[in-house]
Amino acid sequence: IEPVLVRAYEGVGLAPDRAVVLGRLARKRYVDVRYWELFHDTVPALSDLRDRGWRHVILSNHVPELEAIVAHLGLGGITEATINSAKTGYEKPHPEAFAHARRAVGEVNELWMVGDNVVADVAGAEAAGIPAILIDRGNRSDVTAERTVRSLTEVGDLL
Image 1 (cartoon, rainbow, N blue to C red):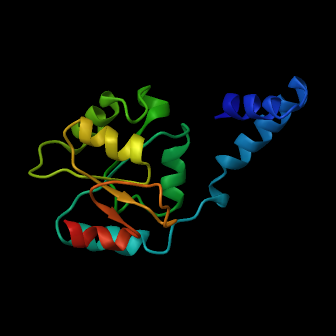
Image 2 (spheres, rainbow, N blue to C red):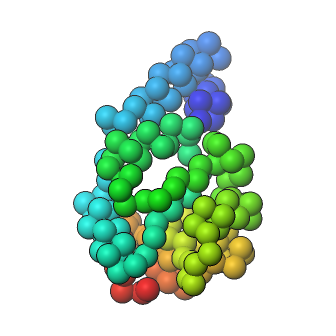
């Protein structure tokens, strides 16, 4: 993420040396677990789904520190694995990102992708043969997906 931030700072006119300093500072704060929090419905919804027999794997385009962030947020007891593009080298919607998730979950009767990005999560999963549910918390009118919900709590209604 740091090179992306540096390019963005340079793109708005900051000198390269200043852009590098700000990029490092922004990344340091971004990966600091103290600044991350869950949506209020995350733990109750995932716990309810787990109690109904669903297993959870996180598949994310994220920084290498994602596992520490997940642990800090208390998701370790609810999720079985964290598949992270920073470690696998494949970002969603690449089919190999979804293949890593399939391998992590093993043989299952049913597999779903739940995410908030139409291209990376929904289109990527569906291209890999995995049905998907889009969470659109912002009530955006430009978002289209066959199965769209407004909160994680509503996912259970579709499964």
